[in-house]
Length: 172
Image 1 (spheres, rainbow, N blue to C red):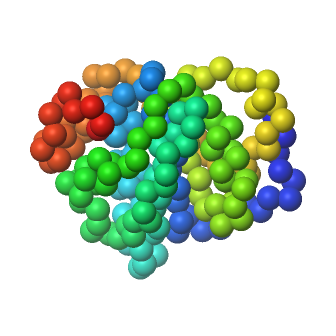
Image 2 (image 1 turned 180 degrees about the vertical axis):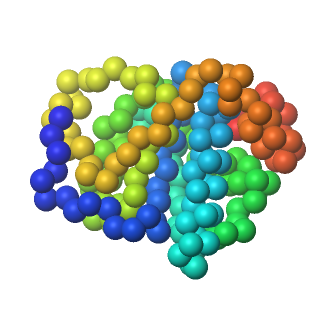
């Protein structure tokens, strides 16, 4: 895998894009607490900056779903209930994990290169030969989620209650 020598490092953290792994091996109660923690950090950052932080979310697996609409995160928004609604609204993807679709999306658009891009994943994937020729974006980070269901279950159940969705809901 190559690094792009011409890519510039990310600017301030005021524009964040989460790419959420929706492959078969990861469940919502694995990644929802990680996203909730990241949003809480962004609320703190917005309070420090005195201005909203822009958040975008995109689901991926072996393909990419559409980007969510930009969300202006402030010190007070989104609340946990509003976050549950935003998570529910993310266009979904399914299948196996393939990070190169995220690399291609970020590298194809200069404005994405200026964002802080984060892959939220269980990091269970097989490196394909095609990945060796891909340029890894300089401003891409990884947030690992745990597949240990009991650890993450508390926050997930809280968000399900706030969203009035049953635990077995197929798209959250």
